[in-house]
Amino acid sequence: MKNLRIGLWVMAVIAVGLFALFAFMLAKPKNDFVASAMIGQPMPEFTLEPATFDRPGLATTDFADGQPRLLNLFGSWCIPCRAEAQTLEQLERSGAQIYAVALRDRPEDVARFLEVYGNPYTRVGRDDLSETQFALGASGVPETFVIDGQGVIRYQHIGVIAESDVATLLEQLRLAREPL
Image (cartoon, rainbow, N blue to C red):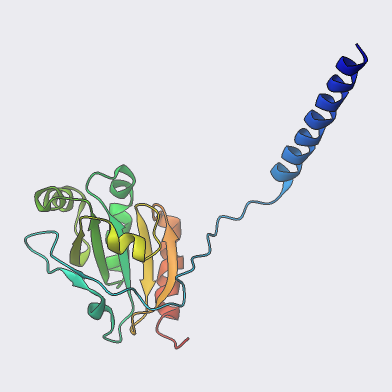
């Protein structure tokens, strides 16, 4: 009987401790920024075949021409990628040059996606095995990187680009024109 009471007290103390821990974690301010280990690093080496019939493929060397640009990772099968399509077109209209990597996709599906949702991309490479995605440190789609004119990753946006993110991305592109 005494062991049962001690066990109940121990369980009560553990429950109170867990409750206090949860309350503390909920009271901490949320940080939405995910620091990427790739920021400030050169892009990994890759050469990708074209993902569509009307756009050239993509290689690391395409990013070393002195002009900063966005690199968007997407898939025709990705529902959130559809949600950001209009915002990517808005970025293109604002002067952003956008390259893309289509992940685990067929050319006909990519072409259909771009026909339906718009095509803000100058180049679209095909990453059938997600090798480039993983080399970039991307965990999913959509993800967008700001790459400076020397091929260095300057910023990473994880998830859907909303209209409220346009100013930040344009500012990051502007900053990518300046040396590190």
